[in-house]
Picture 1 (tube, rainbow, N blue to C red):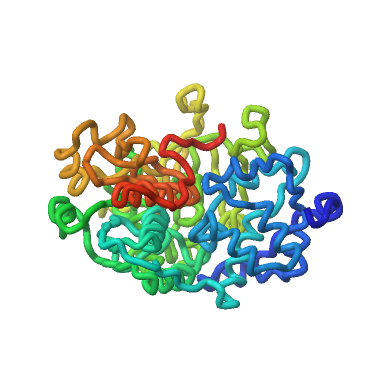
Picture 2 (cartoon, helix red, strand yellow):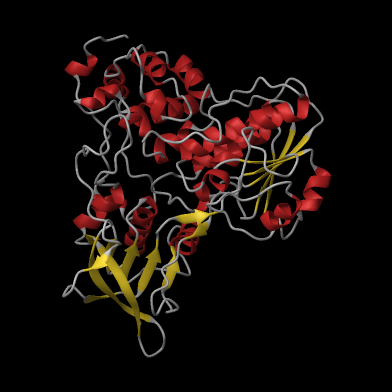
Length: 488
């Protein structure tokens, strides 16, 4: 512990966001630079606890006190070594993870927690800038071939680990570029895609092969994949979205978030589904909803309103969600800040009863009603019915599991047992293997909708299981078993 009084003498501090009226005119990341001396003070706040519960909050097992101490001591080269020891892609998690590690920080019991995410992202950005992130090709090849289906964080983590173990790895992606939802689901203002590109360059130099524009199960069958490869890792995510089957759902102008965000991300706002000049309503109060808000604002929406069926979360940790669990709190993301400054609204405890069409079948308005819940089953409140204008609605209500059909249906017919669990996810045993020999599942496809850190942890762990399956032993680390769950 470099500074035993750091947590007493320094307050939590994050870099400022660029002014709203400036940042909504571009698609760059919203944060200004954070001077190294200020970051050092943030690292000094880490108490080097006897039992660092941040480890329990993060499924990756990140060595947080160690690299905080190294940053304080200005040993950035060793800090990135300790960070990469448990996390293949800290540039992703440092920008996109909601930081359950910070919720579990011991300092957070009675003060603001350590700014773990900010230290993490500054370490990896410094490492790239200094040229310390270099390819790590294997010393020898095993001759075994592995197919990874899906190029999100779970698939990429599994691919990098398996390539470094000496296997010939091919990553299949149905989109036209690698990254999964990191590429086209996450807006540029949250994470610029150059961060993906430079990591792909490293992985390609290590020997990982990428095949884009290939929809496995359509362009390539499961049988063809099994014939060509010694093992398969399913990492296609939980992309089956939740719908809202209210009257008028078929109105022109109602889109799922993942029908709206990818075209906008490809064209930086120049999209076939544009919010320009329209009254936009985002249904869903989570991170995807915030992504839709920020995108619609940058596209030039006339107004933006966000609806959430749940009550407004508390600002402080409630007694029902004690430390070190991850609490559901009211958040002011950058998109919410933009919404507030531009006169938009976030409406809680409200349900959509109808999508109202005009004479041409286009969306014209939404009919809403306040609800009590969730204990009452979201019972409508009489007398609160109303209508708001809407020409574009994005549904950002989460995901139900993997898309069943195609590849998964074909594999299910080959499975020795139940291929899907009761929630519709791909069932795995304790080694991440499905009911089909040599076929493994990692990330949201097996876990269900989750966080990026859980996806990377599962990708790393599944890679170790595949390596052992192929060679009889493994030196790859196992972050978590498939049965691991967040602190509750």
